[in-house]
Image (spheres, rainbow, N blue to C red):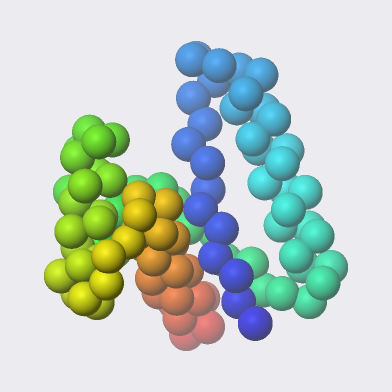
Length: 102
């Protein structure tokens, strides 16, 4: 089984401690999932948006709205911001997994 994890955006210039904590937390989660037998596929935040047709450097509020609209258009479902983001992560994980397997 494959699990996609969105890589956190780390900007040490803005909040060094938070960035380091996010990095450590991600490593702990990934190790726990791997120990449980899951294959973990990392997905860059930019990939999440691109999988839903969102252009790079789009402002956060616009990204969220575009993600919700893309999910509604493609799949005919109403999604929250987090659900739409999770769908983008899943699509990116699937694509990355296929590339790694090739």
